[in-house]
Amino acid sequence: VQPAFPEVVATPGKTTVTHRRELADWVAGADNPLTARVLVNRLWQHHFGRGLVDSPSDFGTHGQPPSHPELLDWMASEFIAKGWSLKQMHKAIVMSMTYRQSSQTANTELARQVDPENRLYWRMNRLRLEGEVIRDSLLAISGQLNERTGGPSVFPPVPDDVTKGSKGGWTANRDAVDYSRRSVYIFARRNLRFPLLEVFDAPDSNLSCPARERSTTAPQSLALLNADEVMIAARTTADRLAGMAATIDDRIVLAYRLALGRAPNGDETTLAREFLTRSPLNELCRALFNLNEFVYAE
Image 1 (tube, rainbow, N blue to C red):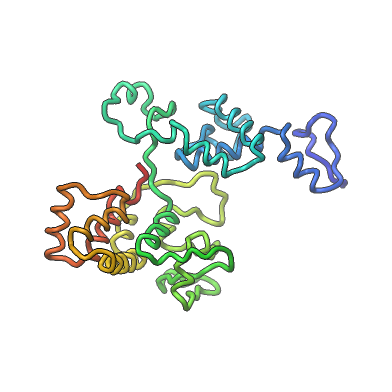
Image 2: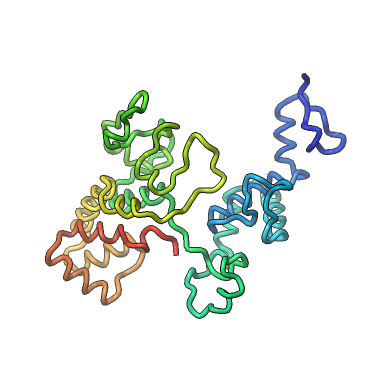
């Protein structure tokens, strides 16, 4: 059998190939818009929680039609024109007025009646963060994050019962600095998912995953209350606050700014002061990590 393009999808007159580079050039060629459409649809899905095409792995006759075909084609054309730059397309999406809309639904009764599923993007979808982002946020806020890039995968500690029955086990890195790296560096095993990421819908490595689930479950709340990563982050964040702010009020303001990106309002400040009269600072940090505002992108 000689190398060749699949005749069912080949461009007329282009049926033979002598090198894999030719196949790659065809797949990513400017005259093949399908590849660009699939890629920009995945980018849109990442930022909005749902793609312009609801079946991201099926653009064929059995897939779903795009909700905004002109937008999909324009994005695909821009993607090709910008040299297939993912960074440029991310920038174009997040700087758009559509992306920068509020997720609030106040005074939008008519819009909710006409388009309850928000297919027309009259507001921003409220999205729960991925498990990797939540873990990385805990490390960054507490000052533990190791920003070193590249190198081998890392093995953070996991409970012993998680590794039972896992062939080869899981030996944690000796140096905490190593396993405080970003979650993208956590070693991926098909028969073992990192517990904190698994509870926040990390996909099964045995299967392809065209779109991640975004569930809201009781185990997620229990993990944010009791997981070792959260407890350690709460303690180290409290130490960081104590070293950066001298007064209780300053520590409360700094805690809100680190965890939620904003200052507390008057009621929140009062509640935090009362809370700290009977509980340590690390418990306030843990409470902030359990707010919806911490795990949801507004």
